[in-house]
Amino acid sequence: MRRRLPAGLPMTWGGEGSRGLTAANIIHQHLRDEIVSLRRAPGAVISEKDIAAAHGVSRTPVREALLRLADEGLVEIAPKSGTFVSRIPVGALPEAIVARMALEEVTARTAALNASGSAVSGLRAILERQAEVAAAEDHAGFHDADEAFHQAVADAARYPGIWRMVQQLKTQVDRFRHLTLPQPGRMGRVIEEHRAVVDAIAAHDPDGAAAAMRRHVEGLRASLGEMRDVNPGFFDGDVSEAGMSMPAADRLRP
Amino acid sequence: MRRRLPAGLPMTWGGEGSRGLTAANIIHQHLRDEIVSLRRAPGAVISEKDIAAAHGVSRTPVREALLRLADEGLVEIAPKSGTFVSRIPVGALPEAIVARMALEEVTARTAALNASGSAVSGLRAILERQAEVAAAEDHAGFHDADEAFHQAVADAARYPGIWRMVQQLKTQVDRFRHLTLPQPGRMGRVIEEHRAVVDAIAAHDPDGAAAAMRRHVEGLRASLGEMRDVNPGFFDGDVSEAGMSMPAADRLRP
DNA sequence: CTTACATATCTGATATACCAGTTGCGCATC
DNA sequence: GATGCGCAACTGGTATATCAGATATGTAAG
Image (cartoon, rainbow over all chains, first blue to last red; front, top):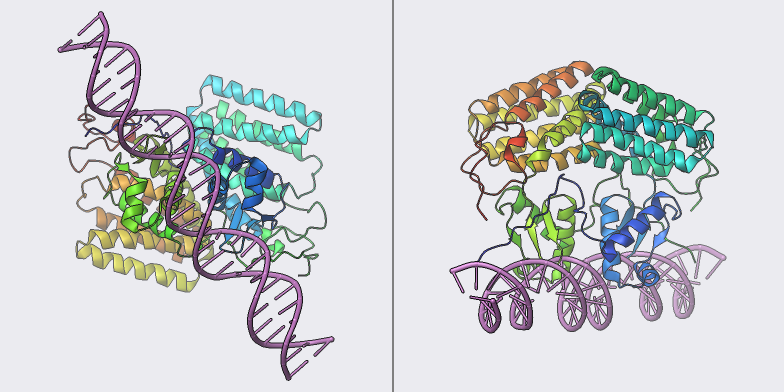
């Protein structure tokens, strides 16, 4: 008996095999968006049955989506009890930022060594676009451009797998960021930091690129300051563990 | 209606919630062992039905386990066609090692800053044990001690999440390592590298610890040299991409 | 002998049904 | 009124059945 050899090219270790647009994948994406954008609040109950009904499918693909979200740390499944949107693990955020810094630093370094001319041009284009949306006070567009920038650096370094890890790390921090006040001047500062990274990459200066990227992510850590409003029980553990000052009060009384 | 607040403490972002010993988890662990240890060959077919029968359960928990393995990159699911043990993505291994180096370097650095006395003692104990099993030519025990060492460093740094990422990265490389010839003197060299890391941590020398760990992982990269035997279609992409020399021939003719 | 096509038989994806813990509320009790 | 207990309505975990796509094989035409 001859076994057929699938022609699939996995390309990386951690990537969901980009298996077609199955119902489970659609629901996964949908729920993920809702959770990351905080349209579903941390701690909120997720009902398999409701999701299934809302999408007009059975519980099976919903369950598959939820299991993957659980692996990503975005939902918590309590057996025979319920499924909930994960609270933001503020205690783990500093570690996540450390990991991201380490990964992005080496990415920038390699990008400086490997970047093609077109890659540099692409980076500059993203920089321009980001400046434009910043001038328009378009926060959503700014965030998109930021993501595009970091991905472009990863592409320039040819590190798709590391980029996937960074994306994973970004998720929790981004969710937290949605709860912070927009800081005046932050967009301009970020753009300058990005520009420094691009300049170092264009100059093929690995140490400079790594240092610039490190400064950038460091700045990100500092931007986790103030909460947007009186925050409910969105967090797991003590908020003061996030490394930055914070009223530390107003947790809901249970 | 009051909603109950689960007392679960997630602790990190990426960890499977350590949800009880469900059938799916058992099967996941079982299959994972078989795949990593190469008892299931890369490219081999996995039948949901067979696994289910072998474990005396239905296909549902088997499917859950396989989906998680697919997310980990250990199996590939071809819709309506079949599920296979992932071929080793040799082309992605250098990137995995780069990522691991970045993460373990910062881990060692933080460990040097944070390590308690007991943590250092624990590290030395592991070092001793590793020397013992090395003297006994116990390769399996050596590998276990190696894993314990790296985990202990991560524990000393209080980076459980980063350790989980490193574990993920180790998986594919370890699978590859299972196919390489044991290199004479490697165990002794590894132990010396470990000792350098511990010494730097004990001396609270962050730069030294980071450098020592970097050298260690660098040595690991170099150890990916020769294949154990004429290698079948265990690899995805060209083996020469692994960064080391290799006959590059004898792929199975389809 | 080669090639194209129809079809039988695999597979994974989904639907449905059932089971067993967990939780919360209400009633009985003190 | 406070407290302990037990039932009822949830939930997630598993089992079973059904559907549709992909592959392989056999057959007929060239």
